[in-house]
Image 1 (tube, helix red, strand yellow):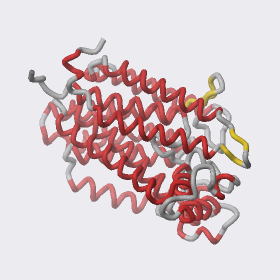
Image 2: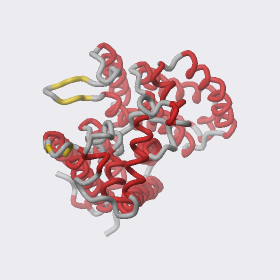
Image 3: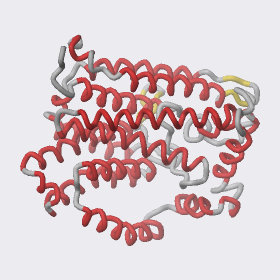
Image 4: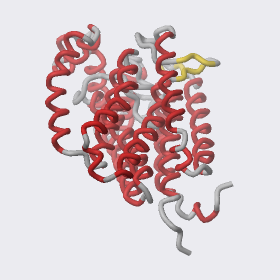
Amino acid sequence: MLDKKLLKNFDISVILIVILLVAIGLVMISSATHVHETQDYSLVKKQLFFFVLGLIAIVVISNIDYRTFANFCVYMYIAGVLFLVAVLFTEPINGARSWFKIFGFGLQPSEYFKIVIIITFSRHIEKIKEKGEEDINSFKNILLLLLHMGLPILLIMVQPDWGTATVYIGIMIIILFVANISYKYIIAAFASASVILPLLFFFVMKGYQRDRLLTFWNPEVDPLGAGYQFIQAKIAIGSGQLFGKGLFKGIQTQLGYLPEQETDLIFPVIGEELGFIWCSIIIIMFVALLLRLVYLATLAKDYFGSYVITGVAAMIFFHVLINIGMTIGLAPMMGIPLPFLSYGGSSLLANMIAVGLALNVAMRRQKINF
């Protein structure tokens, strides 16, 4: 069992925010699956199941010193990459090879590999730092770090799951920034992106992916096709106004006009039925969670722990930013779930494991005074 001394450093505020977000998510998933006056509780039950698994995972992870994970980085990374390769040989689901089907549940390796990449990338940078502060900016080390992240990102793009790949890139950028990477590399990265992104758009992206980007600027160009999600999402959020239309009373939601409304477009469901007030409350809760994680990162007793919490915060931040952004017309549709709120067992469990890892670091942040 967990040492009682460590429990004094357990951050109750983080776990309370997570539980509240999941509770709101369960209610909204119930509403999103109450379509045409029929109710299907199967998704709510599955989400609740993964929530309980997540709580168990947090307890288990809390009992393991986070430094232990650093000893298995190579094995974790290799195993994760093998899973990302193996999933490419599965049958496509919604046009992407991203899931294994196991006992009726969908297992998405890229969700769990986020935790692995946060751990292994953080340890990689810590090992560099141990040799000297300036070594992080040597060309050799930068190249190795890019290869470390580049391989899983490439495999995820092949699935294709460009939204998740974008989150991985965000995690990498934030951790490197906190590790004091030189600005010359940041400038070089932006310069390279300005060349690479157009090439990806014209020669790598599939037709429907290009359509999503183009209709992002003007959804009305294809209102019944690529622009449909943008238009319906904005109608739902806007029609909720300040206080919403009430649970199970949203027209867009209850008549099934919102596609993927229990997953990627859960935020418009909240906007339509609970209004601007609850949308703001949820955003404030995410901000509070992220600020708390950033604060805990500053208290970590070593580089590894600090970068791990930073990676967890970055993962949640980019998911929230992209998901809410795409539902209000500020980002392209990328198929990114809203953490703790959207339906999805892999997403929920992975996020709770990540939170458990951050709490683990925070609990062991310093010598405990009595």
